[in-house]
Structures are given as structure tokens and as C-alpha cells.
Image 1 (spheres, rainbow, N blue to C red):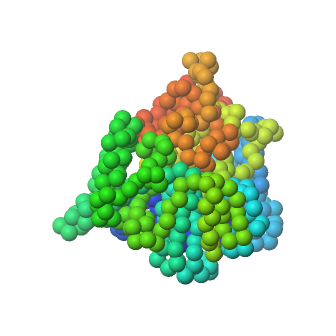
Image 2: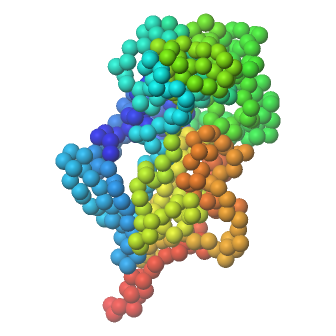
Image 3: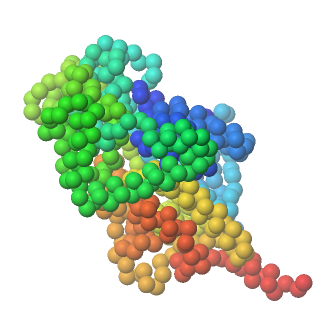
Amino acid sequence: MKDTFGGTWETHKYPGVRSDSDLYTFGYRFKPWVGTPIASGQAILDYMGEVIEENGIAPHIRYGHRITKASWDSKANLWTVEAVRASNGAAVTFTANFLWMCQGYYDHEKPHIPDWPGMDSYKGRFIHAQLWDPSIDYSGKRILVIGSGATAATVIPAFAEKAAHVTMLQRSPTYFYCSENKNELADRLREIGIDEPTIHRVVRAQIMHDGGRLSGRALKEPDVVFEELKTLVRKFTGVEDFSFEPHFTPKYRVWQQRLAFCPEGDIFKAAVAGKLTVMTDTLETFTEKGVRTSSGEEIEADIIVAATGFNMLMMGGIPFYVDGKEVDWHETVNYRGMMFTGVPNMVWVMGYFRASWTLRVDMLGDFVCNLLNHMDKKGAKRVDVALRAEDRAMQLLDWIEADNFNPGYLMRGIKLLPKRGDKPEWRHNQDYWTERHEIPATDLDGEEFVYDCVDAKQRQTEPV
């Protein structure tokens, strides 16, 4: 429905909006990144604009359309997509042989706002970070940010620069990874005159290697990793006896939720400088001047910003039908996090939580091209994924285990997502370092792929 490109980076306009993944891996493999590893939202939009222009993509994008329905017809082997054009309200219809769903996984219009008691009584300005209006002047204001995680880690240092004071109220702490916002390997390679495509490829490989190692260590020795994270905080704040209890000691292990990147230790520096107060408590009620916590403390604020996450939205909220029957995604089984039983000729792009989203976009781009070329060679107009004989007794479970990855937005929306099985083929395992070998090696003639090759058979029997 948007009138321009950018998705997340066009939706979010709160102060300091930036990536929480490094751009050497969050950027595309074919387009070298030359800026800082953690980039502003505007820098990312500029990069995307260059990709669109350099590859002649703009004429193929239709902005300003809201899709209202997608229907598959097995007799015609065809998708029909119904939409409304925002500019004039006209109903339009598109047909396609194959759908590639790349709309992300959260609601860009309605963020998650808990139903807190007393919200109507608050006399100040309340806004969710996702709905932030850039015209708001917060200079000299007392700001309360409710929530923790990547959004809070981004917006709080920006607020602290001009606000009178910032308070962060969190139910539970988050892990932060502090680092300089630079890549020493990239800087050294530039210094000695290496070309940017080579720098991008080498640095990308280095970051992926280090990320895989950290992910494995977080599972095997989380306490050791946490001590290393603490050391980084002490380094950037210069405070050797920095206190982590109780506000910076999470209840879950490292990487069980998103690890928030903290360039230059900025959020901790704000706390040490007295510009930020952190409170770990639950919100009892809003008051006229702010909020009261469950422990009875009242926090007064001129502006309250909810950094409470988003609502999941499967397939952008588009109703899907297969031969007249509406698809319930939770009743489907997900093949490698990208295809669904009972839904032909469609691939869904779902990225990684522990690695850059775009790593999987690149990989699934290759997969889709290989699959379409394979269908052409077979003369197939349709491909389904189906449980094999060996899979039919397989236990079907929710999309991901809570002890694997359990942020609030995912647990709230888990019943919107497809089922997983207990075999690698029937789950999205969140492990880029395994999938980068497995997905390119997928046997497209495996038993799980079911093709309709009627046209090919007919061509073989036709006289020459």
C-alpha cells in the first residue's frame, strides 16, 4: 500500500532510527556497502534507491496498491490477485503463475500497544515509536520510554541528546552488544587500496564467520558470553564497577531474544551521564502526569513513548484462497521456512533473527530462480510441497520452540504462523550457517516436491 520503497525504513521515523544488523551482511551481496556497519534509516533508504536505479527495477514496481485477496485456481494453475489502487479507489486484478511473498512479517499500520489501565487519564503526549511524528519537538522534555530491546536501544540515545531527561521502564532487561561503529578489516583493506567489491565479499564472510561462532557460543556457554558483553560495557563507559543488577541482567540466555547492538555503548553512556534512568518494574496504571508502577513509584513525563514491539501479520494480512477455500496458515506445514503444504506455486521470504534478514533473501532468491528454471525444464505449471511417506507420522508443532527464540511479538503471534515438523526439511531452523549449504543443495526432484507435468507429457506424445 506504500507510495514508495523502503518498507520498515519508510515506516519508522522515530529519532535515531538505525539498523540493528551490520550492513555488510544486511546489505545485498551484489551491492557493496561502503558506510558504517550500523547505519541510519536514511542511509539504508539511499542504498536501496541506488539498487533500484542501478538495476532498472523502478518501472516494474507498482506502488499505492492494497491487495485485498489472492486466489489460486488449480484448473488454470493460476493465481488471481485483487487489489485497490489508492490514487483513485479503482479495483484492479492481476494474474500470475507464481507468487513470491516478500512483505515481511509485521503490521506496519497497527503496532502492539498493551491495554494499560488509565491511559485516558494521561494529560501528556502518548505515542508508539512505530507511529512517531517527526514534527514532535522533544527538546527539554521529560520522556518516558516503555519497553526495551532494539527500538528502545535506538531511540533512547537520540532522545537523551536534547530531552531534559529520559526514563526507560522495562518489564525485563535486554542483552546489549557494545562495539565501535566501524569494521577494522574493511578500513584496513581500504587503506591498502583493495577494491570495494572485494572488501564487501571478504568483510561479509568475516562477519558471518564471527556471527556463527557467537551464536554457537551463546548456546554452549551463555554465562561466559554475558561476561564478555559486560566487559564491553565497562570499556565504553569507562566505569569498571558498572552495576548490571538488576536493570541489565536478563532472565533468558544470550540470543534467546534479539541481541541489541549498541554502537559506542551509547545507551550506557547516557545512563552514566545521568541523562537516562532505568527502571525494571511493571506498569500498574497511567496517571494524569505519567505512570505508576506496581511498586508504587510514579514516573512523571511530558511524552510517553511505547517501544513495545509490533504485531505479527502473516502474508501482510492478505486473505488467501486455494480453490475457493480460505487458507489457515497455522494448519499448513512449512517447508524450510519458505513453502507451505496445500499452497501451490508460492514462496515466502522469511529471514533470520540471529543473522541479517537479507542473508536469507539472497539465498531464497537463488532458490526461486532455480525452482522456476527446473519447472520450465520439466514442463511443469505447478509445484506443491507435500509430506513424504516418512513424514506422515511426524509430530507437528508450533513454528518455533519457545526455548529457542521467544520475543514477545513472536509468542503473541505464534498461532498465525505455520506448523513445523521434527525434521530439518519441515522447519525454519534460524541457522544461516547450516542453511547456506543445505538450501542451495536442495534436490528439487525430492519426494516432497510434487509437480504437475501434464503439458510436458502432452508435448512428448505430439507428432513432430
